[in-house]
Amino acid sequence: MRKKTISMALFIGLFVPGLGVLIAATTLNGPMQELFNSYKAAAGVKAFSAADGKKLYFTKRIHSEKKEERSCTSCHMDNPASEGKSSAGKAIDPLSPAVSKARFTDPKKVEKWFTRNCTWVFERECTAKEKGDFIAYMMSL
Image (cartoon, rainbow, N blue to C red; front, side, top):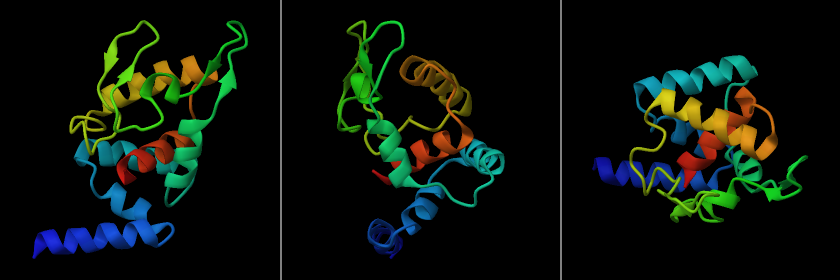
């Protein structure tokens, strides 16, 4: 019965706008849920947008010094469920937590990678709203 309830919740979450974010947020472990809630408080929002997170994931920009196009997809591919490749050619486990179960389970790692990757792609720290939207998108996959 539990499996059927979860499947129905996921079905509703995918087809009812906004509800998917609420369902996705419930799949985070305790420490990650606390981090997610801290992003909500800092951003002043009640929920995050998986659609905005998807938009952020696919945003392309030109680096100011290197004059090269960068986006999350530069390393993590267009499909977050696919294996990626760093700019140095090193393999990166899929970003999607549906494929890589350890993704978005350790707040320290999440913060480390947001700092590193936001700086690399956007040449700045990501905002709390961007981080929450991004996680909401990843959790919706």
